[in-house]
Length: 325
Image (cartoon, rainbow, N blue to C red; front, side, top):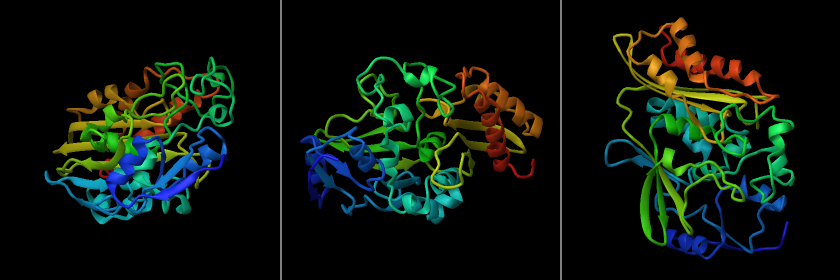
């Protein structure tokens, strides 16, 4: 990688100032350093924000009774936190499934949400829309791991496990920057990468992810399931996060988000609509999965993802209601 200078920020203000000056911020480094080694990023200056304190690496109750998770909390910390495990099980399960134990002990929640896609063409330095070239070599090439839902020129999928669960749980993202703090729903914070710009977020210049906030769980049930090639250090072939409100055996509210199937975590609105007002049974779960995947347009090499996503979604759905399974 190209030579660079290194410094450690001791306050949030120092981190924001560094980002505003064009420095790259380092927390866990599990994505930044591989990008630098591949020369997809070649910063002159790297600033370490992993030890800011000030709540950046802590989980605390939010003013509305929900939960605030500092952006520098590791995935291992998120997976093990008692209240997350009890009230936001989908997030704990998603964090626990990401990478290997070594990765989870290093990677931060904020960095995980901001990571770039893992398309082997893009990461391998082959010119494409995102790297300033023309066309998408994956669209007509080896696309086994790519999108089955797409609305843009890039068919790479969003790689984050926690993002899938957080979207289903209604999370917001707290940002700090030169113009002060602001807060965005996760659905607005994430965006599909654009030609010449692989950043999957709506961060403004100099902005830094400070925390993720979750609304009160309100006795909801949630689960996250994931299918992958290997049991460790593998990204999702497909994944599903399901959050349900159930009364008298009837689903009164549902949130369904699929991972590994689109450039962003995919909100399966048709599945949600199908579930509301129905008594959950195994056949209803299968019908909801079919509704949620009806609009899929698989590529030549990833048609298997449609059936796999349906099976993973049904498993997550039934895990929310073990009395049905």
